[in-house]
Length: 76
Image 1: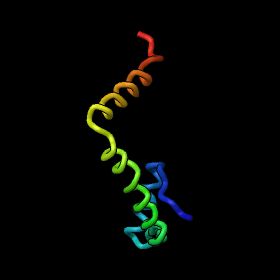
Image 2 (image 1 turned 135 degrees about the vertical axis):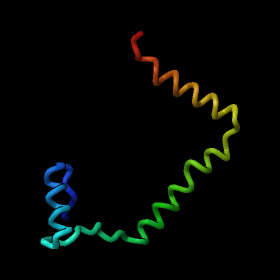
Image 3 (image 1 turned 60 degrees about the horizontal axis):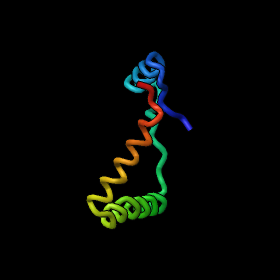
């Protein structure tokens, strides 16, 4: 599978070749629509359901605990 280069010189050369017609534009691969639908279905369940189930105070407590753990190892 061809991908676009991250090197600026190679990218500039590719753009020049595409504009002059020396090479064809690289099209992204076509994704499977069924897989995309399943992914979107799963993504819509997790966070939304958890947010509805938790009260504001519970979410606040979870966030405070996460922040405390995140910053616990930091030296002052």
